Image (cartoon, rainbow, N blue to C red):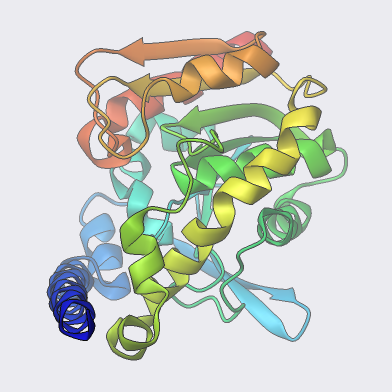
Length: 289
């Protein structure tokens, strides 16, 4: 019996090490390819000039970027897990969009240059996003807010806790179903002692968010039907991270939404189909003008 337990422990340890090494390799590749300054230099070649502002949040600061004239209607982008402000860089390069909107993005807690520690609670994440809305909004101004993946869960919380400053909500492959967002076996493994010692902080922070997500979403169920902000929901059937049946789940509680469900769309919409996000924002603006 002891030998069997020992063998299981050895196998699990090997699996943990392999997963950790693969995760570290992928993250390092992502860092080298998409570091902050490299993305800024890339955007500059498209005549896109991101401007930086650090927004105070208690004793910490939130790293934000905005592109365009602050007097224009605004769009706030909320990235996934893990992620950075520049996950939407392909959207930022659209000339027509920049003529009509001021585009705002930020590093969520635990990522990039934001000093706010990682947060498992969606309510706390929404407080950070709310702080950015209040920082950039002019008097009585309402802002379009877009959330991708985990950012969609933050957007849902924001709609429940502080909807007054939101003009239109755009979900992009959002993590909204408590059932589908239950912690996976690899999340549980990654929360253990060995992985916590060797994983990069972004991956540890991401795992912390995912471990707490399902419980937070479950608490929101009774509040979703009260949301009356105009909402667009983009989802693809080729999404291997967020099941497209999440849309069915959400419509049980909030049926008054404009849904876009595409057969050939994957999870990584900001990279694979930025045009879809761009056109959605433009269409939202036409309807609300």
